[in-house]
Amino acid sequence: MGDVTYVAAGFLVGALVGLTGIGGGSLMTPVLVFLFGLSPSVAVGTDLLFAAATKSVATLIHGTTRRIDWPIVLKLAPGSLPAAIAVVVSLHGTGRTRVDPLILHALGAMLFLTALGLVFRDRLFRVGTRVNAGEGLPRTQLVLTVATGILLGTAVSLTSVGAGALGTVALFALYPRRLTPVRLVATDIAHALPLTLVAGVAHAAIGDVNYRLLADLLAGSIPGILLGTWGVVRAPGVWVRWAVAALLLVSCGRALGT
Image (cartoon, rainbow, N blue to C red; front, side, top):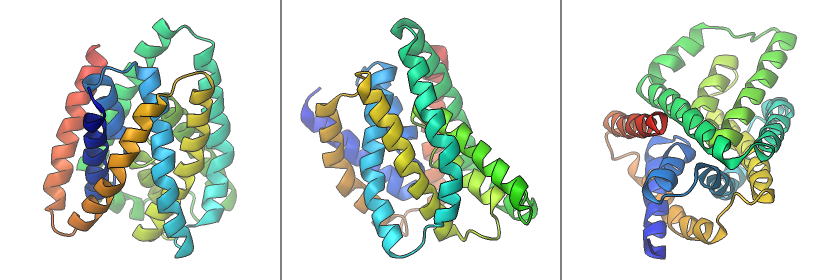
């Protein structure tokens, strides 16, 4: 497929990210694998650097408006960053014929969880306000936050999925009173930036990045995200989330059936 197709894919994914707020990895990685025919490992590595580039702009905007809760980011990072590096190092020591099926099955599981998160997002947030996951108990909360970082680092470096959809749910459960919806999204994005960058660079170091494709995707994604963000106030959000969840479940079936 030509460059225009890749730019169009970046635009479409960017628009859906802007409309739904879910992480681009949930959409981009299945597109790269099932539509463009990339190997799962190269798709993940390319998408991680794609995510890092797009999240850098969002982090800059949120940072200048002081929406990011940096202490929470600093609690997540000691778990997520080492976990991401450890996963990629482990993958490098395993043959490609074993790595790609592992990534596909892990991707299927993460897509399934992301679809559930989209469908039941509002209910999960309501539960988060009632469940006090260690809030008020600093030591317990710190342990749970670092553990969440480890889980996110493992999932993101293996599948490029999880930093957005699952990260926001986890943070809301851990800090229901401390994080407003805007600060929740901003803090999750700020943590996802170093995580996707570190994991992406680690994948690049072992040759799992297609740089030409990455440039084409970025060219399309920026106007797509702007359009999606503009349209989010006009589109019926519930139906958009359900439609994207259905697409994720189809991709999940493809990944687990491979």
